[in-house]
Amino acid sequence: MSSDALDEARERRQLVLVASELGISMEELDQLEFALDEDSSDDGLVYSVTVRFEEGNPPDIMSKIRGLDSGNYVYLNAGLFDESNESDESEE
Image (cartoon, rainbow, N blue to C red; front, top):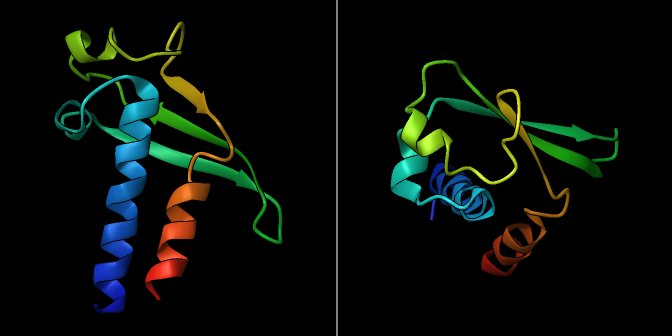
């Protein structure tokens, strides 16, 4: 598998985890405009992951998102992607 293909597979696995954490399907997540922000140390330790949603996303999907009480962002578990990183290492 090429480096680009590995990166795409890793990103897709991370998005599956995000969708699951938010309580929505991948199909619903694919319809949303959002950005993932990681707050991490210089040595790569992730303190938090924030999902920031753009204005104008479908309200019916936005209403399903766990943890979206006010504003357009959700904080996720900092260790959310740990499992996907471990599976990447085993593939190499």
